[in-house]
Length: 438
Image 1 (cartoon, rainbow, N blue to C red):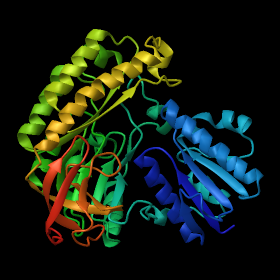
Image 2 (image 1 turned 45 degrees about the vertical axis):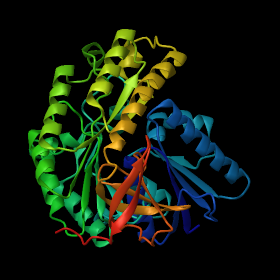
Image 3 (image 1 turned 135 degrees about the horizontal axis):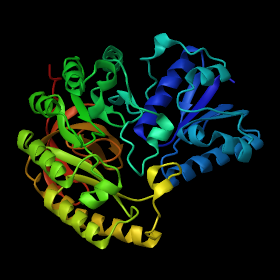
Image 4 (image 1 turned 90 degrees about the vertical axis):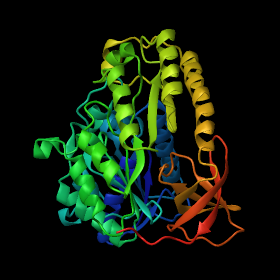
């Protein structure tokens, strides 16, 4: 009973939550494994996702698999936490009573108590990393205030709550002391950071302080809401060498008709002006975005405008998702889901086909260039590395032939890009690992 397997589903914010919980359990004397089906742990904790239909189904399937293992005597206690149980705890208790207990997204003290541990506030900046040891996610806020028409996050996670800056910096310093070199700054909206605690947005101040931490070499910004994007964040990104020339900024759509229907808080003109400012002030920036198609009321003209937007802006990284109606959201309560699933998929494929050509053309720009890259590991005959233009798990990689020389995971190398395709880059190391920047 002193071994616990923690299974984490969903986004990187869930990953951080699990890592904090695991630190509490480690302090209580537990031996921990994560995302493992090869363990003799008699206690299993599943941190679920409840964001969209596919994620919910994955969570349910994982729970049912663990229930089967419990019935077979392979595990003895099963707990479910996170977004799915936050939204559907009553239904889950009724439908899957074999689970010992369900907890929401903020019930950390209750979770620890159920597992025989004491939730200690002095451990709030401690983590048991489940990522490779050279990078980590740093969650700077919880919840969201934007209330976009399709999004269930405010219903699950509540209103925006910033983590105090001193707590974030302490956590980042501890990560650096453990050898973490790359930090992904995350929240549901990172640009909103600080407004609830300090009366104004202070993401730029936070990024500046993170750059002062010795050992951290790359800082990467995710989930930046485009409305009222702070100018001082653009300035600090342009000024600070440790901040990657990379920005994850979900636009979701571009026609004013759809932006209004989705309850987004910006117009097409404002989005285009922001993109212009970013590329003007931060040359060579890689912009990642996500788009949502098939939202109620979306017309063929809206899709044509969206495709034109994609072809004009030429995003370096782009994902497209079909609309999924979520209970309790504005669109579920007020709009008819009037686009068929087949049509949603057709529109998704249409935009991704346009992006495929752009991605390949964008990659060709790197041929013959030398990029600073960090090695994430080895797969078969290649080392897998990334430049500052790519985030782990979601973006493309640089493949380096393993036969050339031995490389160390978590170290930086200068890599000459020999060729590219629409998905990845290929290169050769031309210099040993660089020393950390001050």
